[in-house]
Image (cartoon, rainbow, N blue to C red):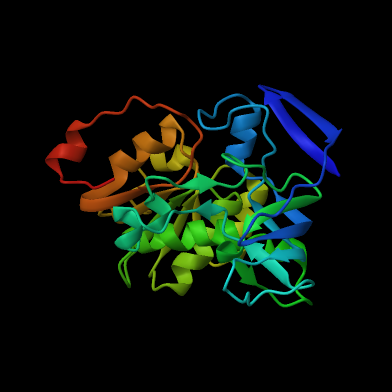
Length: 278
């Protein structure tokens, strides 16, 4: 099968590899569509500490089951031909975090496309417990957005209270999905900070108000007369992190989603004095 292999900063290669084998309790998926996460772009550039080459990345994907390997004594609910999306986060199910219902924070978690081969390939093996069915008529590229959408819904749940205003940095794929999630989960006003015209247009079309970072940085009191209670940073660079700390209301929450910069020097005094949660 064809694969896209990451060998280090700015080094990728299309290669022929043997098809993976599904183990007990796993399915072999023929990949129909796979997204490129911003974290994978950072990995390609050599900015990811968790992506160790050689590696087949790819964790936002949709495909069709071509093989099911059940576990002894258990009848599988899945069949060859089922169309599925995959939760790429594999948890152990028995750690303290898993028992608390926080499987995403499992101490022994593994990620498809990081700790095991991902979907930048024609076939990928995944645990049956990580499969989710999608209608066969659904476009596979649309279905591949299920994983990034789940990230956005989780981010909104972490910070937004019903009828609150929310400020979102960035109108890329994650930012736009977060706009839609926030609107459907009870946000009052959604304000997006973005400078690219095309992205600004998409955010406005979804019903968000849009402001450039320059205008926000120059003291746009008409945009945020009293600050704001919830900020979701879908960019994750030093500039957005600093502006988030500048504009968050006392007692507010900043949800960090973007992974643009591994480290950022920020002034912590306001966070401490105003009881801001990150």
